[in-house]
Image 1 (tube, helix red, strand yellow):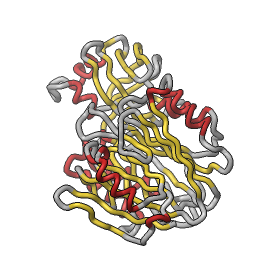
Image 2 (cartoon, one colour; image 1 turned 135 degrees about the vertical axis):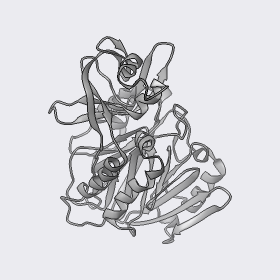
Image 3 (cartoon, one colour; image 1 turned 180 degrees about the horizontal axis):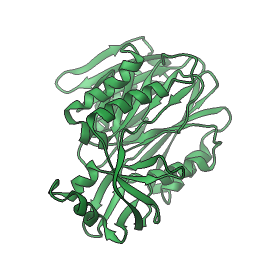
Length: 370
């Protein structure tokens, strides 16, 4: 496969980062950018003109990742020409289905199964229950098919997110990309870099991914009890100290990114399911832990493979990490490039949620690192 990249920067225009004259031979193009730029029809038309035959997948983020750097207010384009792999795509509008599970079930039911080796998902970020989406995706698929991807993000907390397939980004869309054939291998790894602290509590009142009470105590009161004096705004505290759900093995915790808070009903919206009866603890991290975790994810993604150098790395990180890293955010991406080397093209974005299996593949030519 061959990869070329370009970037649009305000007051500068298009910058070609690598050019292999793929053009009409490109089958797949990723376009990651700010909410404003992914909705720009003129910029999309530029991409379409350059890659007339490609499936163009668009997603907004809370920061754009490209080749070891994190930027904002840019549009990053990564075009791919496959030699032996075919792809098929589909798009689901949330208005056309019942719920998040139904979105996933529709994709897994209608995606071509014969020869499917991997499925990648890019979803609306603030109207979706990531847990239910994933359950629906797995409903009609073999467990042998890895599912990777992420939920779109935005710079401003709680604002709209945008995705699109062969069009500008719009609200309420979920895109699936199926990869077919045995030549392309997609590696994956996920390392959080967060540790639990404070008392363990039970979720005593919730609805899907909306959390109301822990141990029969309103969510903001719970945070105020332990973090009062550190934060004037407890909503901000939830963002900095998200919740981790205890898993069946008791060792790992599923980190739940906080998306929004409803003052009227006291519900905190999270990117994944918050089931009643589940045990949770607050999670904390620091700059060094997050940077180290990024490098560990890059290393883990290739440990079982026959080659060390992928052709492309797609990095999907979390908006919650941005709040911790602040000015050190570039160091996280450098943690990835330090493993693969600066010559390996990277692309991605900061998201409202990441999708990744919990185990390695065998051989990698294309890598996902949430």
